[in-house]
Amino acid sequence: MNTLINKMQYDIDKTAQNVVQLLYGHNIILNTAESCTGGLLSGAVTSASGSSEVFKVGICAYDNEIKKRVLGVSAETLEKHGAVSAECAAEMALGAGKVSGGLFETKQKISVSVTGIAGPYGGSPEKPVGTVFFACSHKGGLDVLELLINADGISAEQKRQYIRLESVRQALILVSDTITTQFD
Image (tube, rainbow, N blue to C red; front, side, top):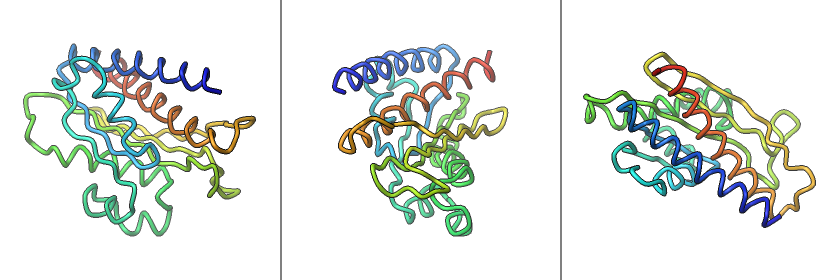
């Protein structure tokens, strides 16, 4: 399993460096809002050389009160759909963009969010462990993605780490895809 985790981390580092280069090349800033990844996405981006030019704010909103107060996720969304939902991910991404407000008016902005159930416990039949929602707000609108990250065959101790790392990798891929489809 350590080999798998090491390979994932290498892929994340490589993808994050590519994302930073794309952001820089397109004069775009990135904001993040994270729940289940607990800051790992922001950490991956800021580990890449040149990130200080393109990364402006990362919010780890693990608690629902922070999602509401800082990111502007509505209480109705949390009650009706839950923190692990497309609706919550969308509001988190939009909220992350609002936090940086008009501070960086000369640049385009992308905000990405991730919220899910990393496990190894806590899932339900409707939302099993590995259910993760991503949202990316950008000049052309808002994209939302739902994934079920399969961690079958992985020990309970390592399942959580695997799901969190794969969520980071998928969020970076979403940002990269958004840049190449919306800004080229």
